[in-house]
Length: 140
Image 1: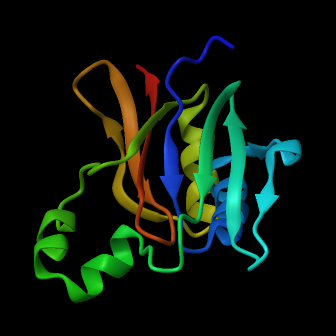
Image 2 (image 1 turned 180 degrees about the vertical axis):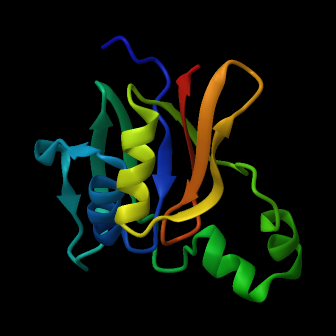
């Protein structure tokens, strides 16, 4: 395995997150790594994009993602009130224009439109349904 850092992201509805991440962002699931708990919550899943993995799980019934947390927490609303990635993931893709179009078509919330970052990448930022932020980029 060449990937040495693997993001692990919690979701209140991990199974729905898998479907969204596959449809909006083009991830593929390694179904041999899917473990569903007795209560039908997601114990573990692994998705890949371009050979790199991200792990997902639902840690417990009390977990809430950033979007839900911001609904009842004023400080969370304030730190989410910007177009930047806060505790998110950066993913480099081969065709940023096609990826951006796919995310839009799948209904991803675009937080920052596709643009030149000024740092040698064209990037955009999107939120998944639970409010986790994903920045996608391609060298310009």
